[in-house]
Length: 73
Image (cartoon, rainbow, N blue to C red):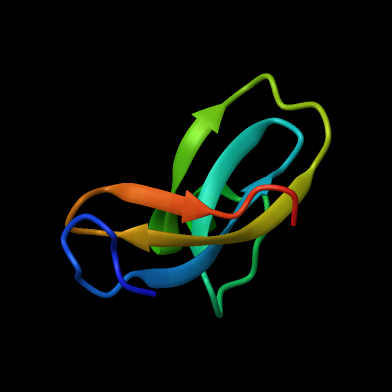
């Protein structure tokens, strides 16, 4: 996917909630609750306050530092 702001290529991954944290992680890496896994292959968007664990496809632009995801998937 192309970033709508800078036109650079975006990395495909997904946004996931562990029931506690919300994070983005690259495709191809196991999504688990280990903080080390997240900080090596992604980053936290928010922590605390998320009750149910879930995930959805998302794209990340490293240049602009934005995450884009389609709602309702």
